[in-house]
Image (cartoon, rainbow, N blue to C red; front, side):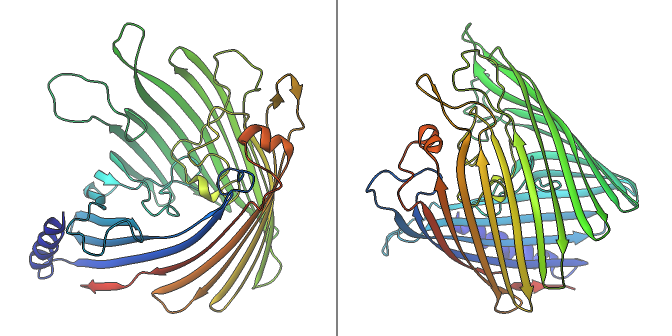
Length: 417
C-alpha cells in the first residue's frame, strides 16, 4: 500500500503539474486524545474508563482540467501504539475517496467512484467527519443543475464482495446491498428547500436459503428560512417498506431556531422526534426510525448514546436541546444541553418506566492557532435516569463523562493556482 501511495503521488505530480488548470495537494493530520468514562453506554459500577490517542492522516489530491475533475484521498487511521515501534508492516491504510466527475453538458455532470455523500444537515447522508475513518460510498451520481438556484442529484450504488460468476450472499460490509436516491434542492427568496427520496436495499438469506434483497423507503424534506433575524429550520421524514417480511412504519421530525444576540453570541432551541417501538410490543413490525447514513455524532448529544452504532430498533428518542455559542477572533465556545426521553414505552419486566432518559451537557472550546492549525477540546457529562439503566445497562450513579482534546492540522502542500 505504501508503494502504491508513493507511485501514485509521483505519477500524478509529473503528469498534471505541467498541464492542469488546477491541481491541489492537501494533507490532514488529526490526533485526538480521549478519556471515555461512560461513553455510548453507562459505565458499570466501579468500572474504569479508558484513555487513548487516535489519529487520522490523509493525503488529498484534487485535479480540475476542462470538463474533468478528479479526487483522491489516501487515509491512515490508527490508535497510538497499535503498530509496534519496530514493526515492518502497517495495514491501517485505505482509500477514502477515489472519484471522477465529468461535465457532460452545461447542466449535467456525472460523478463516479468512491466518494463522500453529504446532503443538507447530514441527518440522512453525511460523511461522519468526527470519526477518524469517516464514511464514503462506492456510487454513481448524476448531477443536474436545473438553473442557478435549483439542483437535482440522482444516485445509485451496488455492492458485491468480488467478481465471482456465482451469486453469493453479500457480507454487508457497507451496511447495504444497493440504494437509489433522488435529492432536489432549491433556493427561493429567503427560503431553501430540499427533498429526498431514498430506496435502500439490504441482502439476507431467506427461508428458502436463497439470496433476497429487501428495500425500505425514506421520503421527506428539509427547509431553512430567516424571519426577523431568527434562523429557522425544520425537517420531516417517513420510512416504509419491508425487511425480512417485517413491515416498516417509522417517522422523524425536528426543527431548530437560532438567534444572534450580537456579533459574538448565538442562542437557540432545538427539538427532534425519532419514532420507536414499545419494549413490550411483540409484533414483528418495525416502528423505529433509522437515520441510515447520517452523521449521527452531530445529533442527540456528543457522547453518542443514540444512533451511533447503537439504539437501532429501540424505543426511539425525543431530544429537546438548546445551544449557547460564543465566538471572538480565534476563540470559540459552545454549550449544548440535551433533555432526552423515549418516544415509546420502556418496561422493566411488567413495570412501565418513566419515559425520561436523562440530561446531557456538552461543552466545546476552540482556538484557531493559525490558518492551518485548529485546537479543540470538549467535555460532556450524562445525568442518566433509572429508565436509562433499564434501556442501556450500567450504573447511572457513576461519573458518566467524556473528555477530549484534538489538533487538526490541514496544510496545502501544493497548488497550481
